[in-house]
Amino acid sequence: MPYSELAECFGKEDADTIVRAFGGLRVFVPEVPPPDHPHIAALGAELAAKLGSHIATGIGGLHVDFPIASFSAKFNATERLRELVVRGDLSEVQISRQLGVHGRTVRRMRAKIRKERQEASQIAV
Image (cartoon, one colour):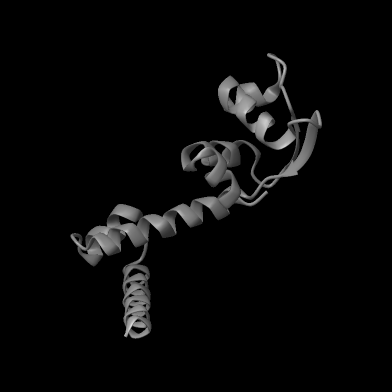
């Protein structure tokens, strides 16, 4: 199950919780986890129930391969970097310190966004 599907179905915060608990693993997800099920300890009762009802409704349960946590963390970091660069109110140094990335990473994102905007304006003409 790709991270994007988890985020779409459960929201980013819950998707991150799921990936922190099960990232990189094949996990059996029951349709309705019993009260003493390990998923409830890992995710909380509400999220464990939502996960089961989304993935295993009508089939009783299903084995699912969850994405590796580092992928979603990298995705989130890239999205956060993009948000800060687009916002435009922080310097390269401020962004790199806030996110813990190299200044070169910030410059590359600025260049990527600039290129995307140029290409979009050429298409619009």
